[in-house]
Length: 556
Image (cartoon, rainbow, N blue to C red; front, side, top):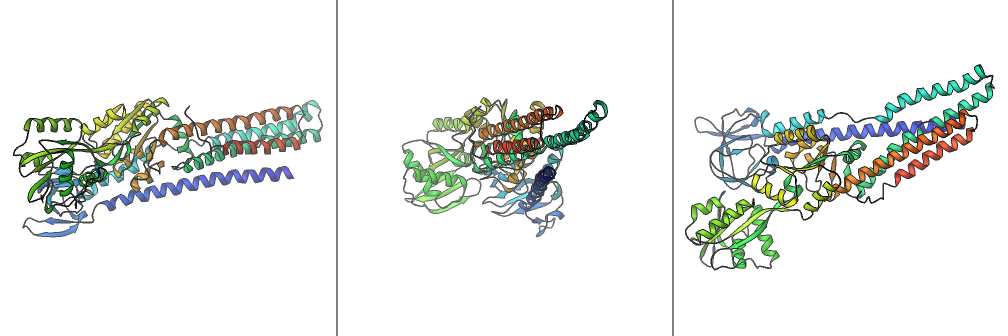
């Protein structure tokens, strides 16, 4: 029978869609788990320890006990959590805290496994075993947070479990009741029962949702938005709050010179020329920021001579036989020997109040100026936050491991509603849990390893894919592959448009079935009419869903 064959083919197609969706979900979960396991590779496998006799030796990190003295060479990775007992250096803590600028550590400063030591040797005393470092807890928290999330609602399957037996019962009743109770023709009502079975086939319903979702996923991918499954495509439409990391999300994630403040008789160009000359051969992020603005202003940089780095404090070099120093505020306090102290103090307070890092430049023993460095805000960030509010997002929150002063300065500049600063990864998870309890559906937007647990715990994890870590991208439900924050409001509009089309398809499919079902019970429908209506409904819902591929959703 043609109708039975058509129905069988469409049912097999719908089963294929479900099987494919389940396979993709399992594959994505497997990749996420492998990425989480790969986080442990951030920390080194061995550590150089100093025993009670003063002998140094390399041992596996798993064998290092709490309280052991560990030596970390310049440029090496810190193998375990601990605190500094000797040495001064600048440590890149971005893998754990997300801090965009290396942090100066001295005696008693806390350091974390997996972070990268700068130019100074450090001696630390371990405070946690390898199995309980901050990095190890990040791995555990990602898995625990993912297990807390409820499975997606498979409403089509639940509907089919009810709908199919009901339709079968109605068809059987249409075949038996009229002949037995009303004296109808068995052949005529058998025919009408077949018509009812054909028109009641849920193919259009079953196909309408996956086709719309696949089209929505394809349309998003063409915009550089990678969405890992239909459930994650639907979630943005229902979000009520969004949490964002600061570094690399609301900001560009790299230091930038914000202000140049001459003190004394030197001009901005001379001050910048001196600083760039001393930093010309350095790979430090702040040095690159100084060199970048010097190039932007067309300053010809001639590298200084006899350049020497003082780990964690600054750099000194010779320019025209005069010593020029470029150093941190700590270094400034140690070396200060002249200049306009009142103007200098005022400028330092203003820089600190703005959440910026002050870099001092002095010639011989006289301070000639300050360079204020900070993490540059994305130019579009304030507009994006405003658009999110306009779309009905009740609260936009910043979660960051950075210090409170720069975090609050960025929040003020971007219009963020609330700031949680100086957070470790587990504290970000706690903040997300509070937001979920308060608002319901909450998204977390981030780019680093330290954001992965919070992204996994949130209702929706969104990674800045172009610059994000592999762990963040794999843990996230959605990745903005073009590093374009403006895709966030577009994503919400796209999600709402997808849900609208899915509802249209479901409503249309049900309406067609109700109309033809009624005509069938009245004896006014034909088998070929039912087949045409069923196939036509399937084609129309497919074509309606495919509009999502090229549709550029406007604000709504």
